[in-house]
Image (cartoon, rainbow, N blue to C red; front, side, top):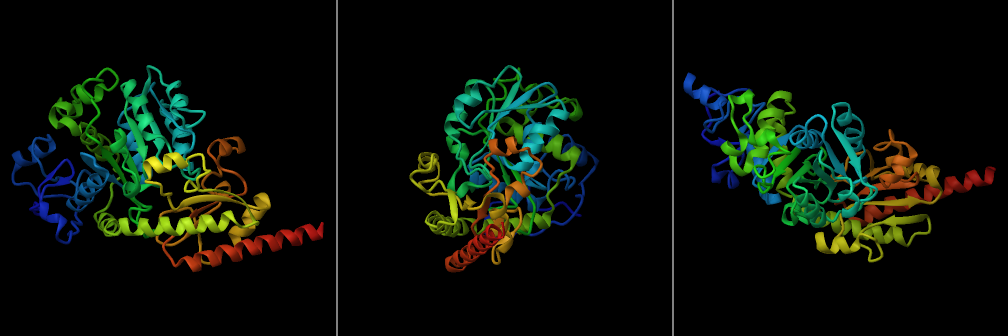
Length: 434
């Protein structure tokens, strides 16, 4: 394929017209060089341009630029899934014998990565007793290379004090990595509060239609890698795999993303396809409007559930008595995300009966779809965890996680009402039979 006309530098398209025109899909594996010297310069990272789609692609580059702009970051890298983004984001700052410190409220697969896979590779993860900054800070030691949190926990629904955690991380010369999948940059931009790295599962609210896997890593461009070279020599010392290139010298403020792209994406290949990038770009065009409707529908659902005797409890940060309401006011503008949890009367069996009776809500483990989705975490996303581990992550047997969609609110509430009725009827039948 001939070299495209849109110049690429570190994953960005530098043609401002891409904001105003349709984005073409560059569905190609490799790019033609002008000459042997041109190819050598590209592989030496001496000039801007594309050489192989495992490293960069023009369509993916447009997506990267827009994600970075939405989050207020300096640069972004888009990869095949949210889990790939999280894995790369952490691997880029650690080495064997080091560790990261994480809040305990995590998505189930993130917990598996942190509790099992990373330790098997020589990188430990210390989990705080809570998401409070003091609980995190007391676990930081000389081997710590990052602090991690989810801005809004999935499925716990907790809101982390990003600004306070950023202060803790900065005090120890390590970056704060924030998973902002649930909140999205429409409700919260962690970089504005001091976060250094932001990750996303674009599969969720950003894509918005449940059709396409994708992940993103956003670099704030603000972490002082040079000043913390003792902890992070990989950025400030020559990389022998690139002819002695030093990332901080060559790429300046975006050394983090440059190394993530050149070392991890290039060599392990969790690449986002151009077609997937195109589909995600279509979703991002409507994310602001969708989030507005998601938030309003979730408020109506939470109010309905809170007044229903068939429901034992509702965890919704929009309520004034919720322990995270103050943080919701600070970080989410007083709003609450459309991800919420509640407990069905009747414990585990009651929750399962409710779940099985849903009709309009889709029973699956995704979230952030335009459609309303329901999940029973104890049976699915957190199934591999012990009861004690589930409890620490905020998962209870009777818990149902809802990702409230953008359908008409009357239809949403009608489905919840009939499913609660079916669960109560089944419970009554079982009690009568005993």
